Image (cartoon, rainbow, N blue to C red; front, side, top):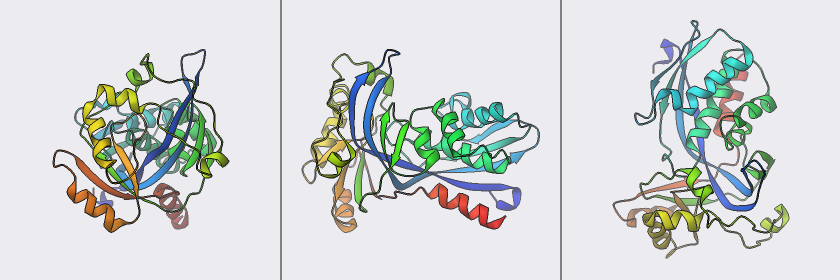
Length: 289
C-alpha cells in the first residue's frame, strides 16, 4: 500500500467491556445494558484508496468473511446510500484484533471506514449523524465513531465519555469465536441485574459480566483461560467473548505473565487509550488541509 498509489492508512482500535450488566429486555427483543467501554492501543489497520466509479472493493480482508458481509464494506455502502455520493473506495483491512473475541474489531473497522470516507469523500455528515448511521450496522459502532472510552446504556448506543486512570491489561485469546446472538438468546442469561451508576462504578461497586457464565458453559476453553489468568489477577470476559482480560500493575509484570501463557493461547499486553488513535489521525488530516 504505497501512499504514492493513493492509499491512506487509518487505525481501528479495540475495546474492553470493563463490566457488562444486562438490566432488562425491551419489547422488540433487544437487551438493555450498562457497561463501560475502554479503548486500547491494540488496533486493526484500514487502508483506503479513492475510486471515481462508485465501486466498493475489498482488496484484502478476512478470507472467512465474505466481502458482502464485512462490516467495513457495509459501512462504506451505507455512507454512499446516506449521502448519494458517486465516489467509491478500495478497502484493505489488516487484522490485529482477534475476531469473535468481544474486542469490537469488526465494529471498529466499520467506524473507521465511516469517519475516514466521510472526510475523503467530502460528505461532512458530522459525528452525530455518523454515529446514527453506525448504529444501523452494530450496537458498538457509535462508540468507535465518537472515539472516547465511555459509560454506555441502552443497547450500548447511549454514551457518556469517561476518563479513567491509565492501565495495563493482559488479554488472553483462547482461539474461539463466540457468536453474540446465541449468547443473548440463552435462556439462562441473567436479565434483571440492578442498575448501577457512574459514581457507583467509580467508587468500586461490585460489577460483573452477565454474559460470562453463558459463554463459559458453552466454551470450556474460555472458562479455562479465566481460571488460569485468575490465578494472578482478577480476570473477566470482555463483551460476549471469547477473549478474557485482567488489569496488571505494570507492563513488565504483564509481559512476564504473557510469557507464561499456555502455548495454545495468544497473550497480548495492551495499554488503555481513552482517546482513539483515529481522532488523532483525523486531526492530522485536518491540519494538512
